[in-house]
Image (cartoon, rainbow, N blue to C red; front, side, top):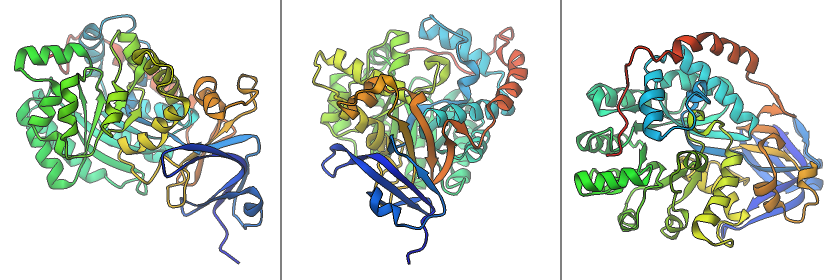
Length: 449
């Protein structure tokens, strides 16, 4: 007899990606897991005959790839709701950066742990993070059981020390947590990191085989200001400094203009864009030009940004908003169909986050990062179209079970690796010192140039 599987998830409907990029749903199916990887997606009848150390009865549920948060700042959950209804310049300069100058390693780790708990409950199995004190974030990821791509952010105002810290972290922690942690270099943005530092970052990325995670063309005002001051757009700056010739994750890109598309088309690195539509709506920005980027073959993944601006780390919400905002922006109800939105949430997000063929689909050889979604709620029935139900009707609370590397992190809405009350209580005790803005110190001044 075959060696017993580690886990069999049986009786479910499975979201399956076709080789041509299509998405279909197969009922009465099962997912077989060994050594943290998917070894088979088969019928429930076939799986019933397989020996297994653990079985999950998933009748009435949908198995799908775990969601991937392609750009966030996990510890910023500590600042959720603290600066609302203000322009982005005031948000950064008068609130967020003065508060962040009070950060301690302990607050960063507690915030990251709380964020991990929120993402597990929302069906997120991996995230790409760009922040400070990243050793503590890595420790939180290891404890939570999630998968993550982590980069230690830096500004040119920090001198060479910031860039060197980011490189040191990337080299030390890559492959940690049994391979669930990968790392990036993380310059903040073209308006806070000068050309010399961006060029040095590109050289380090090539030398060490590291990807880069950066904010760029966040909004149209940044692009206009860059054109006025330097005669080039932020995307052209990325090209000029060599960053489009390495693997690059660009956060936001709502300020990408038509002339940038030809520049991006000439990139020799693997370029991915992360879109976080809720924050753009709050700040009154345009949206990421997904249709134009898709025409170039550039993947666009879904993100939340930090909870200080987005309020939640709910990628399910990002998927719904992406589909709706894209229809509105393009004035075309046929664009960004439910199946297209699901593709952005799964395979495209995996590519953007640097996970390639390791995640983003339920198929043999992929890591066993999957979630089980309850399809029985009244807001989902009747199920005329499962894809439409997932994108436009389902909510993150419909996720019942979250599995990463074959390990169950949440079962029937019960977290198994983290204690939310303990984490939130410890964080609350540190909030008065964190949120004091009386000192007037800033990490950096936000501008649009």
